[in-house]
Length: 91
Image (tube, rainbow, N blue to C red; front, side):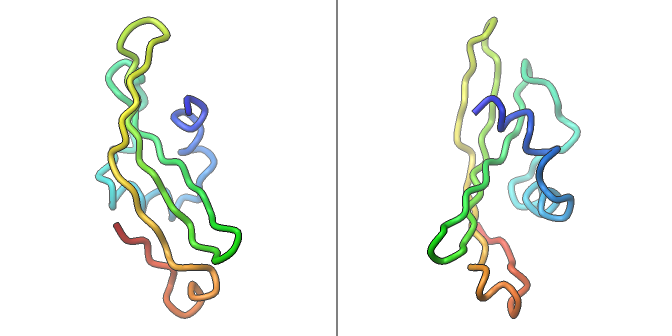
């Protein structure tokens, strides 16, 4: 989970990152684990191709002690339908 907090902004495609930031209301310039850091974890279904995105908020409450709260979730269209629909993410 901590890897996701630091790595998602570097590993996710720019367009998708901005779309998810808009959907979840994430400030992409927030990089402070002490004040709370947004994180998005992506998972894809191997059967239907649908991707799910989970928005977590990390906060270091004391030295090496973290508070993690789920703030939201979104899915996109399955990959088969993505070509015709534009693969819009929804909440």
